[in-house]
Length: 468
Image (cartoon, rainbow, N blue to C red; front, side, top):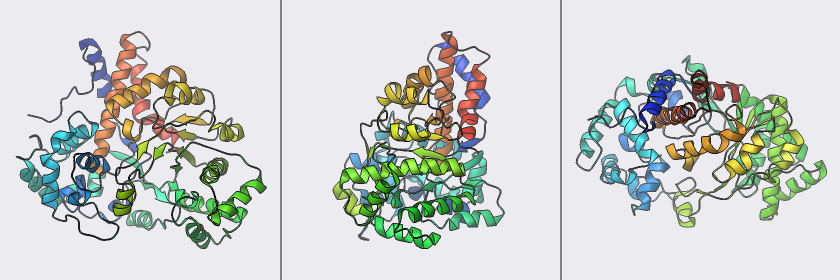
């Protein structure tokens, strides 16, 4: 019996379901545009086989291991490395059994749909994963991974990926991107400029990172003007590898537009490690406005991903490091926070600033009205904890009435889990087609208009917004 219901996520009303089916049939086979994500460019550069099922599905995927950990499984038992090099489980089959024995924990979650999609469509598995099927699953997937058809480049082509963007730090030498470019492979993998490590005074090693930024660019980054020039140089370097966007993961959406002398003084304080928490937030906010101005010059699309209280567990941060499933959404203000940036550059139609949120209460109250009037502003899709069927539906319901469709940017998968990419795009296409079918059925959208909108949401808006 297949793992996947062919009508999953479609409306239950028969007539509306038929509309959704027809719309989905028109977009299901469109190429995947993945303009923001966190897959490793090394995969595409070396095209080496993935090592084993545990390393593919469990160890790197915080959606998976955070759920298992919430039910008492130590991260070390799931192979998650320790900062001190201490012992963790290294036997792939043991890690896989921990996962399979607890697969029931994922019932009703988007992770379950993503995983089942990969198991069935990539590996041809149709029996549900469980303790009883764990070893058969492991052996089958492990055998598949030895074959050329399951290497990263072959899967990239099989998935129909037209372009994918990785997310790369400002100090990254982009050597993997250089290897991809020089290999002659036609797959389009581009970087995105993520400067958090050199714009956040509260990040460990900030001053040393800024010094390294100067060494990379030949600019004097002990001065405000030299520091900004170094960012411009790095952005230009990223563009030589096809970058079309920047990305900024700040704790808040705060922006500032200070006088030059005030910004320079705050920068000096940041380099000395003398900023208060509020001053550090102000500096990050100033840099968002500076980055927006740079985007007017170089054309890079700007993404702002605020509102995550990162690394909430101090013990897990100390033992395993950052990005281990303990990032938690917080309340986020956008109306006041974005006003300095939008007052400075928000009327520029030649600028694209894409704002995301983890605070769903802001959709209808703040974000849709802002994007519905400022030419520079666009709304990113339902993100992270809301990258789910319900989250996507709520997003459309709360933003469309004020911002419409063109002030959104389609879908991006924002994932580290390579095999979940087609599953996530398929989920988004199904949810959007269900939403459009409901609009048609209730007389709010013409039957002839819906296929065009469905194509835009699945493909066209992302290409246009990210200048791809």
